[in-house]
Image 1 (spheres, rainbow, N blue to C red):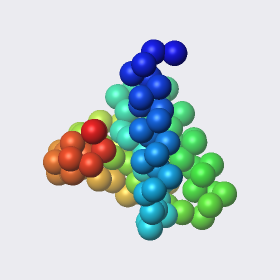
Image 2 (image 1 turned 30 degrees about the vertical axis):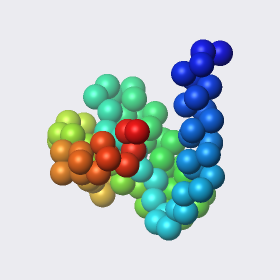
Image 3 (image 1 turned 90 degrees about the horizontal axis):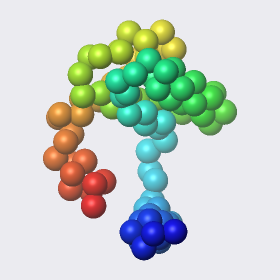
Image 4 (image 1 turned 180 degrees about the horizontal axis):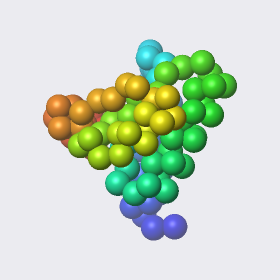
Length: 92
C-alpha cells in the first residue's frame, strides 16, 4: 500500500470518528454518466428506505436531473453555490 494511500486512510478514519453527524440525509453527488446516476440513485434509495431519511443530489448542472427525479428524488443542491464550503471543509 502506498504511503499516500495509508495517510489518507488514517486521516479519514480519524476525521470521521470525530465528526458529529447532526443532519440525517443521503447526499449523492451528481454524476455525468447514466450508469453512475442509476447506481448512485439505487444505493441512495435503498438507504433512504431503510433509514427513513431524505436523499439530496449535489449537482453542478441540471444534467441528468430528470433521471434522479424518476427515482422520486426531488431535493437538489447546486455545487457551484457550495463550492467554497466544499474546498474549505471537504477537500483537505
